Length: 405
Ligand SMILES: [Zn+2]
Image (cartoon, rainbow, N blue to C red; front, top):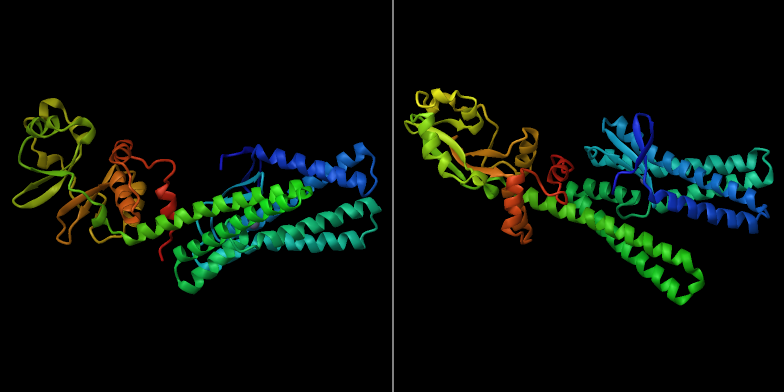
């Protein structure tokens, strides 16, 4: 979702409002005003003001619901990046997934729990307090809307809270975080399609349902498309979880004699390679790896020193550079590339020799092969040159939410 406009901060969490929120605010105000005019017999200007107040109070309730999720996440030590109000309500963006199914359940249930509490508090207030009838009715309406919010959100499919609860339950039962995500995403897709189908059916059978039927189909479409992206994430995570470093590594590296001079290294190797496809260089002597040669170090060395300095002198020993074992999970490769901000990482054999290198293009190629998704070599090449993943494939974030189970 596109970032909304920042309008404030609550408990240190930026509050954003997406432009689509104004559409739903206007629709709610209109619908409330019509109801108040016809039902409660309000005069037009008062009905519009009261309609707007009720709409804003509803979004205040949505905000409290999202704060419920956010504060429980914060309590677990998870950073909450933002709360956004948009066309379909609110969403709290948290930095990372909770560590255990129990904690995921707590974050998921906190929102509906707040809505349910608001339902009881407002319903009691409308009965107990000596409010003018019109205001008591509005408080009662707000109580009812909070009740609907609690129940609607507990429908068990992603991206709804009920879907998050289902995900935590499947995770708890199967012991697999990825299985939890897959089940909850599939439930969301099914529910989304069902709502689309039901909306269209209602509209066709009785067109007087009009807006409600269309709105049901639109919500169904939103749920279905969000659930589909969760589903893609679970497929990606499952593919990554299957792979080790050896599946992604290539032999795009050269081993040079550590006893040649830097000048010889430059003329014999660097000048012969294409600029955009430079392999990794390692130096060895007496049958042992002496370390990695970084091209930046050449630039740092006075030109006059190039023919009197041997490569051995400028190498970085393999024990000093970030590296990964052939048998390490691909998840670790992805995390290390980001953590050390590397273009590629060195893969070491059990005997501590260089067995290959992996860059982001190699990672994407291996994952695509595992998923049997053909990716053109041109795209892989672009990822290699850019040194970053395409925006539609945020592997760093996807891996971050895999946890360590
Ligand atoms: Zn929620």
